[in-house]
Image (cartoon, rainbow, N blue to C red):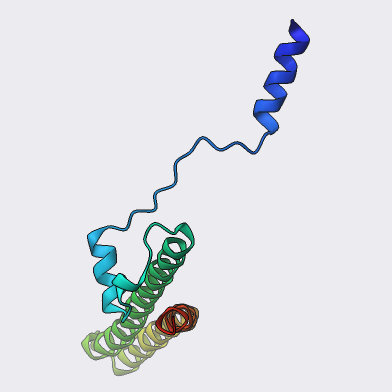
Length: 147
């Protein structure tokens, strides 16, 4: 009896049987996004899991592109604000001593420029990734527009 239970347990654990359900349905907003990207949804067989999978791939790439683009914009904005803030801080330093004012102001500008440069440098991979995802998405779109 123990051997039978053991064999059945091994079969269940090591089998490729999947009990999960796949969702091939596209939501209305996803259909609108696909149409906004220039694809005619009526040309697709939404019962065909491969076509739905490709449409979901297009949507996933578009979402990644938007996310990376947003992070790039946020980091470049932070870089610009940092540099502008450093310049503004230089003009607001007033200790009464000209040399001290210039020293503190210059240190503030250097620190703000360094931080701004770091933010700007970190934003570059996000911009590159956004462009790469856009190219991948557009390649998939062209494949389906030719059908």
